[in-house]
Amino acid sequence: MKYKRILLKLSGEALMGNQKYGIDPEVLMRYAKEIKAVSDKGVQLAIVIGGGNIYRGVEAAATGIDRVQGDYMGMLATVINAMALQSALENIGLYTRLMSGIKIEQVCEQFIRRRAVRHLEKGRIVIFGAGTGNPYFTTDSAASLRAIEIEAQAVLKGTRVDGIYSSDPEKDPTATRFSNISFKEVYQKGLQIMDMTAFTLCKENGLPIIVFDMNKPGNLLKIAEGEDVGTLVTM
View 1: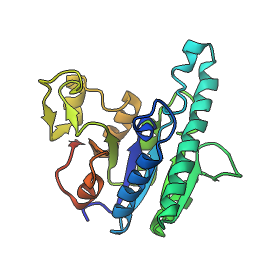
View 2: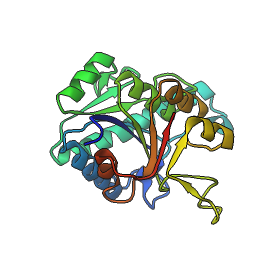
View 3: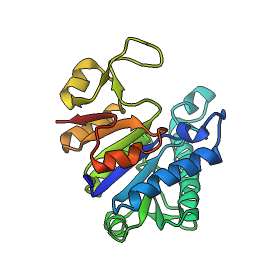
View 4: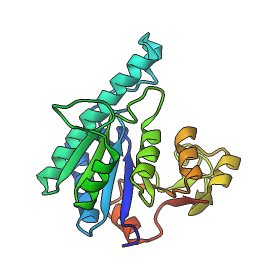
């Protein structure tokens, strides 16, 4: 396997499937099986999942809810998704630990870096919920931060498209896909991969990002094995 330890970033919206909100059990189980295939090969896997299928703190301001309050509500949404994913993974025989950026002692452990690393070393899948535990930070930023903290070798961002394009491929049929691109080129071309805080964290720490289609069966395993899937962002 090319990677010994990776961090997988999933969006909350991906769990909706064809629904308008909530969690599609079929999508959840499909993702769980993809993760199991990688874990069975001995790869240490950590996961950060968003909460956009339930609630978005950024959109709270439009409804009159205080931004900070809305962000904390969004954090709780990510914990709900993390609990659902944890249950799906354990149903197919994997050992997991759910760690939160905010204290929810009855539900999950509080994030402690050394403990998280120890769980990974023991072969457990670690799911990070509640983002960074701070308002004004996205789950992309949480993914970058946690990946750096646990010394992951790459951040794998699972999306609906098969990589990074010159423009939005869902809107522009002439958009071209990059197989490899540098952090500098992403800045120069103004491409939207992650929010700027998350992207800069990866750049400053030399942490590669791989953007790929999570909905295509086998893609996650292929990346772990070193195959050329999606778009690789490096220094």
